Image (cartoon, rainbow, N blue to C red; front, side, top):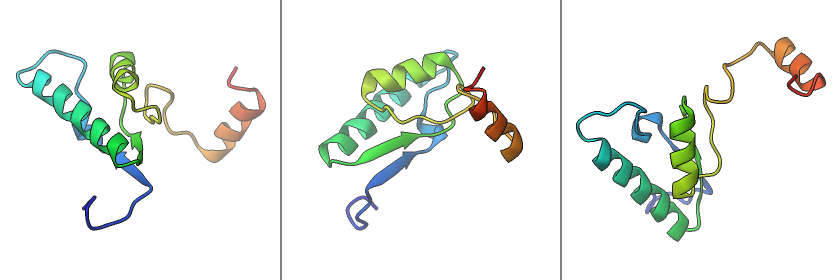
Length: 92
């Protein structure tokens, strides 16, 4: 799809983000994620990693060069009213 469609930003699905615990194939998953991020950098694309739940995942994504990240590692989804109140309190 990257070859056929001109995209500015590519979202990396959470299924590509290695889990925190050890499991068979984790090294391969980490290499695949690094390769995806590197390819997107080489193509001049921005990227967003979704479904990031742990500090370890966040640290790895930042290490490989993915700096736009969304997920529960920052916060759970909130109703609009709660979100607006939190913004007013500056996340205190």
